[in-house]
Structure formats: structure tokens, C-alpha cells
Amino acid sequence: MTATLLLMAAVMCRADTIYVTAGSWMGDIFQITPDGTRSVFVPFHSYSSLGVSGIAVDGGGSVYAASYYGNTITRYSSTGVGTLFADTGIAYPQGITFDGAGNLYVAEYNANRIGRYAPDGTRTEFARDAGGGSTLYGPQDLAFDAAGNLFVANWGNSIVRFAPDGTSSIFATTGLNHPSGLAFDAFGNLFVSNTGNNTILRYTSGGQVSVFASGLNMPRDLVFDSAGDLYVADGYGIDRITPQGVRSVYATTGSESPWFIAIHPGLQIPEPSTTTLLVLCGISFVFARRKLASTASSPHPRRITP
Image 1 (tube, one colour):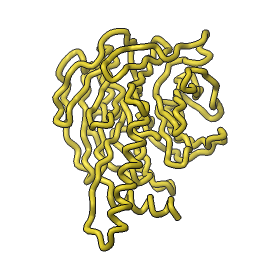
Image 2 (cartoon, rainbow, N blue to C red; image 1 turned 180 degrees about the vertical axis):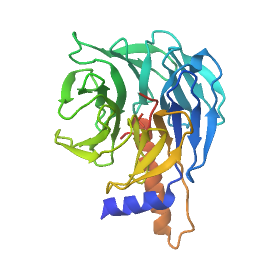
Image 3 (cartoon, helix red, strand yellow; image 1 turned 30 degrees about the vertical axis):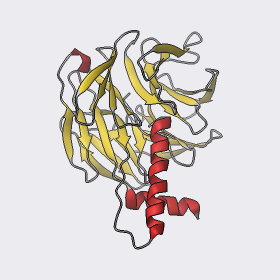
Image 4 (cartoon, rainbow, N blue to C red; image 1 turned 60 degrees about the horizontal axis):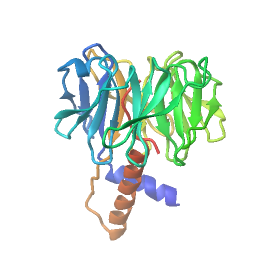
């Protein structure tokens, strides 16, 4: 009953804004409003925008974007004004995501390691490959579960789980074909995009796998909205897939192929007939913000993850 009420509240109260990076040499960052309107949030403007990849939104609504070729991370205000957040020690960043304390984690593809940046920009190394690609081999995307474990999608066909203390274990290898996007739903299931065979897999917390969607066009990053719909960077647009698996085109990105996606949950309060609806809207909003802060699909910048 509680889960049903929360889902209803999320549908009634959601006003999520989606940010998309275009995976080209001189790509833009797009913004898609709740009604599906697309606009350029940040146009390509400098070396720090070359090959813009991972994207994430922090708890205050600032947008962080990684440059794959520029080896930088830029922080943008809600109006698109950018300031350099980090430019040292980064090696070809892909997916980025936040933990619950506001630290930013960066998948460094060529270095086979995960960097961690404190809110003030101080860098530490969270993890690196144990040797021979056994733990990190072309890390593409990152997502936190509700317990604070960090999951990493390796282009080398594995999903690795890192405990908060950095201890690693292999979570999954079955069914993977160049995974590039990760996202958790509200029930703790992990969704993985397979760029190599155009599918999306769903893994339970115990590691059981099933095909959630097929027939896509080189799917990349994934992110859930506050209503439980899954958004996929696919082909030349963003697809939306309902929890029942019904897929539709949510927005197009013109001639630029989307790479990573992130979502900023907003609060949209309808005219309530009872105070109960207002309470539910508040619960839904807090739940969405919690997911954002603890993650938040996106080779791309992210996202909400639990």
C-alpha cells in the first residue's frame, strides 16, 4: 500500500528536468524540461568541453560534466554558467556520480581506476584495477545502491561492486555485452544497458538476470525519474520505458547522439483536494532528492540512482 501511494504521489508531483551530453568531439549539453521540450543548456565552447561525457546533478541542483578529451570536470549553475571544478589527475573520464555525502566519483576509462572528489575539489583515489583487468577494465558508468555500495560497469563485460571501504567483488558477468549504463530502481534492481547487443538487463539484488528491453539502437546511459520510468540514451534521442516495459520516444537530440544523462527532480504540487495529497507530494520529493544525493545513468554524466 505504501509503495503504491508513493508511486501515485511521484506521478502527480514530478517535474523532473533531464540533462543530456552529446557524445561527439564538440558536443553540447542539452536540457529537456518535463513537457519534453529540448534546448541547449551549454553549447560547446572550449577545450574543457571536448568529448563531453559523464554528467551528474548535485543536491543543490548544480550540473557537473566531464570532458573525455579535455580531462576536466566543469560545474554549471542552473543557468548554465560554468566554473572549472577539477583538471588534475583525471584520465579520460566517463560516467560520474555522487554519493550521499556529496563526494563526486569519476570512472577513468583509460586508467582503469575510480577517482573521488570531495565537495571542495580535493581528489583521492577510491579504487584502481587489481591487475590484468580483474576488477576495472574500461570503466564506463557508476551507480550507488541504497546501502552505499558503488557499482561499476566495465566495458570488458563485468559489473563490479565496491563496498564503502573499497573492497571489491564481481557482481555480474552473465549476459553482458559491452555494458555502458547503470541505474537502480526504487526496489533495488540494477538496470544495465548493453551497447553491444542493444538490450537492457535487469539484475535483482541477488544477481538474477532477465532481459528488460531489446531492439534498441546502441543504448548508453540510464536514469530513473521520480515516477519510476526509465530513460535511455539511445540512437539519436531519449527513450522512456515504463515499469511495465512499454517504450516510447521522449525526446530527440537532432544529429547528435546522446551519451550520458542526468536528472534533477523537481517538485510540482497540483491543486490538492485533501491535505493527504500535499503530504504525499512531500514524501515523493524527499525520496527523489535522497536518490539524487546518493548517486543520480549515465559513458555519461548521471543521474539518479538510489
